Length: 274
Image 1 (cartoon, rainbow, N blue to C red):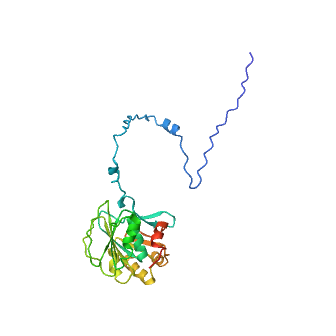
Image 2: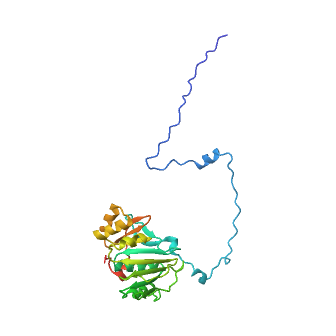
Image 3: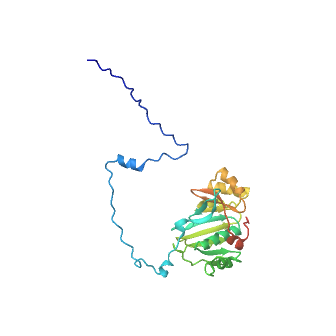
């Protein structure tokens, strides 16, 4: 019987699957197949949720009087100062559950801008000034009411009470010292300093917030010594444009554009330093 010759068959070569391309630098990581990942977890089970009760029309109705009481307060989103170099809003928690002391090193235009934005923020403004002209008219033009801006005489104290829903900006723009008052929560005492002199060495470190327009070389030296500013921010304070300001707090130092809108320019004019 003839022997049957076996012919060796070629064996298939083991070829591995090509490796995936790595993501480009900074690109997203490869996305895993959600079905494949779910098959790898044998203990995975579908969780059943109870059906939500049907919404009953009328059960959650609120009258208009109740809706009128809903307000956005300062602690919710912050007081907008302007925009930074990237165009993002620059905000500040100007009104807090405790008294706040602030200094504004600048002129009358900047002081009225802060008051105007506070009024649009829902804040009552109490002004002590030796230039009372225009303050009451500013309040009426912004709010349409005559009780939102109160102008006090020299040394006169205020009896306005602040609350979370109705904060108070106590603005002092006069050469004489402010009247002695007990600080209260949700009230910010902002003192305007037209020219920063040696007396600022003791005043500025006690502030929670310092806002500054462009400073002279001597003023910048006083601010740098009082607040321990870096050389970079000290130089920036001397190069600010009329429509710029600096915010100096214990935790952050920033420079921003005031970005006055047409509504503000119509009432205050173009930005000026003094």
